[in-house]
Length: 188
Image (cartoon, rainbow, N blue to C red; front, side, top):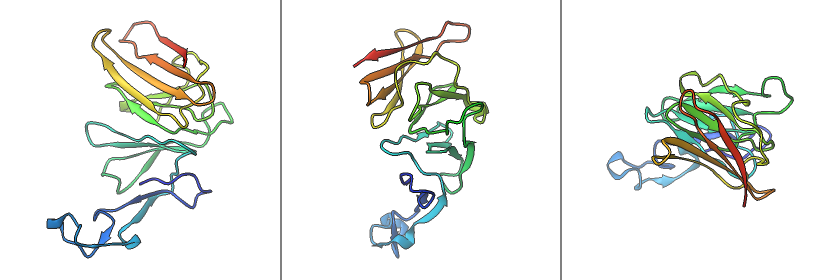
């Protein structure tokens, strides 16, 4: 579980007993008592105000979007490693992401406060780029979500990110290697 930004007092909390103490694995711990003692703080990463979206890759790696950090866990959330933190290179703008999705090749994170989105190759998740597509009118996904789907009709992944301020959906069609980039803002 991840908590909303609270000046570093919140973070990611994990339980392996369904939030209970004294239960048995045979009963999936439902025979235990609900208790805060069943939870352990495993990271100080907090999500931004409003929406939040995490992503699990097919290999079990989890990614979380945070106020100042994008982090990952390769051990079902027991430990977390920052893959990007602080400000984006060359800017004074913090990471400020609220959702992450993935295709077969890339991780995509929305911006909570800007009109640019970020992506990183799955095999190089510390190398995030914000200039892979033109900026459009969409300003992050809060409180609406970010989604991805594969379109067999066009043979590409389509990433959608919503904007609550302007009523715009940001659409990005991930090109195949060598294909042209397509991104636009659709008035909602």
